[in-house]
Length: 234
Image (cartoon, rainbow, N blue to C red; front, side):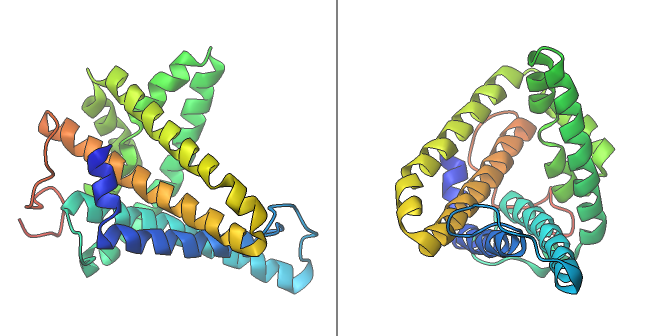
């Protein structure tokens, strides 16, 4: 968790916080929801409504792309700049696989949860790192599921504990900002999106940190070289 925090607070980490915050604010503004209170409003209809819906899809796809680039950047150990290759390399294919894989992952975990909850948690932990394999290793979603299953074998209980700790950390941070967000109106609404973006970046950074420790066989500093990121010189 500490390593994830360190990565999230680098210059690149803060850049990603800004990117996710902007995308999150744009998503709320395009949805039938007030930014300051989160209350629903009457949806826009006609051509304007269709245009807003199209922009919402664009923002959602851009958010997926940002997550892919963030995973690649954290995995490469880049802290100051974001290499252009991380934005360009197979990004369309990776985005498609993350979207389809995300739907499949949600359905698998939901089905497992229906079966007395425990199977759902087991599948959640076992398959959680599939998106890292898609973004970093250029695998497709099915390969990512298989690789995650192999990666987490023998460590699932510890990973479940890590997931709980990260979830609790995010919940505590969100609760700490709940009162200021409620009192500051539109500013509070923007602050809420920034906090959400910071938590997202922290989760991504922690995910990559755990992935690397599992891959390398134990905890330790993330390497200065980047041999595991396709397109990046070792």
